[in-house]
Image 1 (spheres, rainbow, N blue to C red):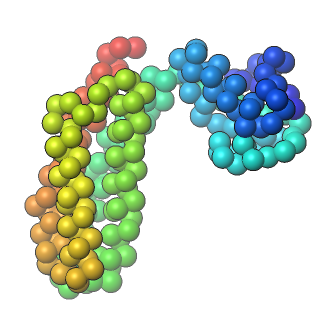
Image 2 (cartoon, one colour; image 1 turned 90 degrees about the vertical axis):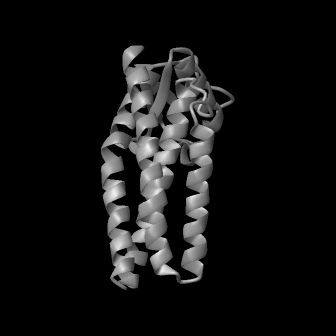
Length: 195
């Protein structure tokens, strides 16, 4: 299998012939150059790491990489743009519950939970890539309160206490996400200033 990284062929990356070995070698090389693999195309089919690791065969694999800081900046910028949509969505969910529109509120609750999970994942990964201790500046406390609010929401939901869910969303979850937003902005500023 021919291996290309950012359009350049690398004949020295063969590993033991397995796709997982090739992926590890490419990731090490990219990491050593301050880059992160962002796309894998095997014979013009885009796939994720796990899928590629499990293939056997193929003619050519093309890896695309980005500088770590560029990837972090893109991710944090996307997160900063997403936070207002997430908080508006959560406010809408609370309003549905307050208006006894339980089906509509529950229908959107999964999306809100998924969005919050994505936001936290972006923040944690970007903190790690920038080698920033995510537990400083009150972040541990914020993580704990977010986790507590999400747990409370789950309890209220299982008990069908929709007004308490609305209250929890408005009084706890949304303000905590706004606090998280300040930390995301600080990370973005740090990544921007060190370029």
